[in-house]
Image 1 (spheres, one colour):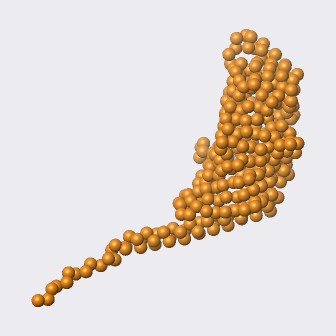
Image 2 (spheres, rainbow, N blue to C red):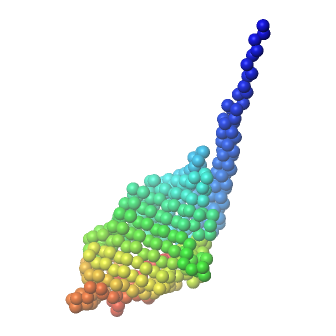
Image 3 (cartoon, rainbow, N blue to C red):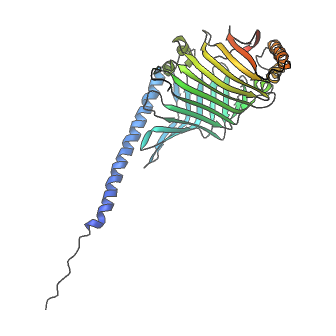
Length: 351
């Protein structure tokens, strides 16, 4: 009697998931290599465009890794110099994005930075973290965030002193101006935060903070920000911006220096032909006398001690009347910073 053989089941179904995974992996790998080639090409295109505009851009080596889910770019010994003479150098700079979200990047300087100030020399910057994030890089204006955690600023040999020696945090944020549908497309909102800043020894920041800490937060709208993309000329990145009508609008901020505190507002701040800030800032100050007295004791820098003494005397007289909130007006004109009729120091220089 012949025994009937049981039917043999096909094993193709067992292999199907593995085949599908291999197909997806091959497709994703192709996308990853295509994406990294595009990133590399755009990076080189941007570098060439900057060089043609008078910038100095160089690096010793470039690597792109991160397969399968990331794009990780490393530039060794990077140097970026502006036509004005300002420059930034990093022993190593890394940039990373998810391969499935290539419009959002995180940039890190793990070994710190060296900033070159035109005519003033180099400052080394190191800290627990120096990083920047950029999202929406395919838009006209991406969202940017720069963060330094416990940065230390070391002036290099032969350079002019840097006003800040260290800080707990420094943060800078920028985004497209969002207020009102009629807002100009070239306007950008910015915010600067300095937390726990310590001035250099015998410098104006140390005196102003009464040997304590300087903490400030300032917000503003940068008008005609598109002119900043040109990179500027020998006068600096703000030179062409100023000549094109650029200005800071809706300036708001808070300032704390030791026991002295103030809130500040300004509708409009510009720069003159020499790059010095012009305009006025309204202050509502609490206990301004210690800060102004600290400026009088400054042994280095460009602080006008006679002007600081006059401003301190006026503040002291007003404080003696029992005023808790003292209104003050800070004026930038003729290249100087004035508090009422008293000149304090040179006006901040943008370029």
